[in-house]
Length: 211
Image (cartoon, rainbow, N blue to C red; front, top):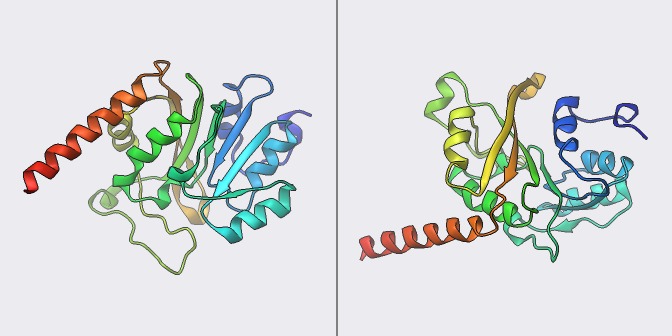
């Protein structure tokens, strides 16, 4: 069945750009699957998909919709024996504080095969929003804590074992404008350990300075 014949919950560009980088028979990870619309879409295309969400109610809803188990865990709690061929993280990473994005993206990269794609999206940082990030709204199950623009995204991933393949904007109506990014894991398996080593040294220096 072709991708064009299926009902896609997002603009075709995001899915098409991601799908073009996947090998035949790919095993995908959906990081923060919500109610399961994208999970269902990828399954209808014939992919094997492992999915997780931090919300028990959303994981149950996705499981009912798609007829498969969905793990309940946070990003850093997700582990797998074999690397995934691609990771889909649509609108899930903005729920993190900006300071938490680098370690979480590094952890997700560790779950990817070398040169595997990682798709993610963020509310677009524009105009006066450069001076402030969204405030937590505890009334929402998924409060948006972080907005990014291209410059902020580039600075975020510069030290990470990921490279920017493409990015673009979309207008999502009431949800405003969003930034979409397709990242590629570094082909060097040692890159992740090198980044973690740098973070450990930085943390040790901060601890020493506080004594």
